[in-house]
Image 1 (cartoon, one colour):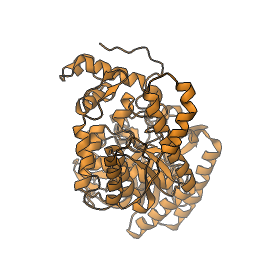
Image 2 (image 1 turned 180 degrees about the vertical axis):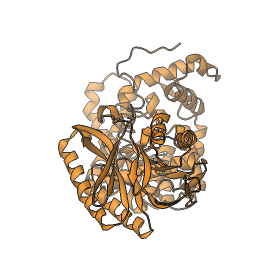
Image 3 (image 1 turned 45 degrees about the horizontal axis):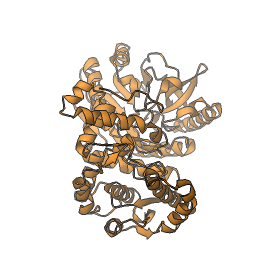
Image 4 (image 1 turned 60 degrees about the horizontal axis):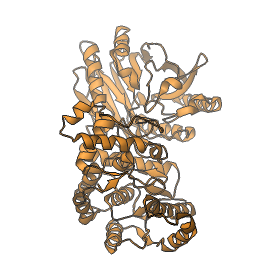
Length: 554
C-alpha cells in the first residue's frame, strides 16, 4: 500500500484548437513535475483542446487529431515518470464526451466522462456533449482518486457516489471562467463537498484568455478538515506540488505548500481585463493594438490596459480630431500617450468629413443636423482605424463600456467598431474607479509604467460632467451612479419593479432606462468580442429580442 503521493497541479494556459502546442505545454510541465518528484500531474478540463471548444467538438477530424495527439503523448509515460490526468473532448461508445484521461505506463489507462453538463452561458455543453454516468474512482498506483470534471463538483451527487465507492482523495479537473459577481462560489462548493464526504479535495483550474472568457487559475487543495493547504497564483501559469501522506486513520493528509492570495475587488477586475486582452492579441498573432484616443476616461483606460498587457512599443494611439474637437481634448489625449510612453499620431478627419458632407448634401437638404451627423463622424474615425489596423496587422480596440452599450449611447460604427472591446462588460462607474485605482497601483506582470497613467482631469471631468447624461432618444437619462444601479437591477439582478423602486429610484427614470435598453439591442448584436467578467455579459449571457414591443414595465 502506498503511504506517500506527490501530485502536481498544472495550471496551464492552452490555446483553443492548438492541439500540438497544448501538448507541448503539458509535456514541459510534466518534465518540471518529474524534476520536483511528482508521481502524478493533474491538468484542467479540456487542457488538450483548449476551451471554449464550441462546435469544434462536433467535427470528426478535430476529434481524430485530439485522439492521435493524446495517444502519442501517452506513449511517453512509459518512461516511469509521472502519470498525467488530462482533459479533452473524447468519443466514448459513439458519443462525444467531456472527458479526463489518465495517461500512465505508456497508454491511456483510464477514461472518465463528465456527468453534470453546463447548461447555458458561457459553455452550453448540453448541445455539444453527451453526459457520462456517475463515475467511479480511478485507481492510480494503489490510490483511489475520485475524479470529477468542473460542474461535477457543483452538487453533492457525484462526490458522495465517489465516497461510497471508496475514493480517498477528490480530484477536480476544473474549468471555471472569471465571474467577479460570484468569485467565492468555487471555493464554497469545494468546502461543501469536503464537508459532505470527509475527503480532502484537489482542484486544478486553467488560466488565460480565450475569446471572451478569462480563466483565473487559483488552483487549490483543501484538507479533510476544510483548511486550505495550497493556493496557486491567480492570472498566471504555475506548477504547485501537493505532497500527501497517509495518516494514522488511513486518510490522506496534504502538507502545506504554496499559498498565493488572489486579488480582489478592482485589482481582480483589472488583472482579468489585462490578461484577457493580452491573450487575445497573442493568440490571434497580431503585432499590436490601435487605440483611438478621445478626451474620455474610456479610451484612456483602454490605452492603459493595452500598455500594461503588451508593453508601450506594441500600442499605437491615434487622435482623430474633427473641426469641432476642442484643444483640451487633444491635450488630454496627448498626455495619456506621454504618460504611457507609447506612440501617438494625429490624423484629422476634416478632409473626409467635408467630402462626405458634400456627397450627402443633396440627400440631406432641408433637414436639420441630428444624430446621423454625429454618427458619420464616428464612422469616419472607425474607417481610419480599420485601415490602419489592416495596414499594420494590428488589432483595433473599441473603448465601449457596458453602460453606454446598454442604453445605446455608443455609436454603431464608432465606439462599437473594432476587433476587441476590452471594457464591454465594465460599467462606467467601474471604469472611472479602475482608472483611479491604476494611478495608485502597478499590477503584477504589468508592462506599463508605475504611477499616474490617466490624467486626473480626464477622471474628474468625467465625474463632474454627469456622465454625458444629455438627451438620449428624446429623454434625459439619470446621472451615472444612478444609471448604473438601475442597469444592474434590470440586467444583472433581475429585480422586480417594486424592488427597484425600493432603492429610491424615480419610476420615470427606471422606465426610460428600460426603453433605452430595449431599443439598443440591435446595436449590441454587432458588438465586437470583449472580456467577460460577469455572468450577464452582453451576448449569450444577456440577450433581448431585437424587435421588442415590450417597452413599458410600469
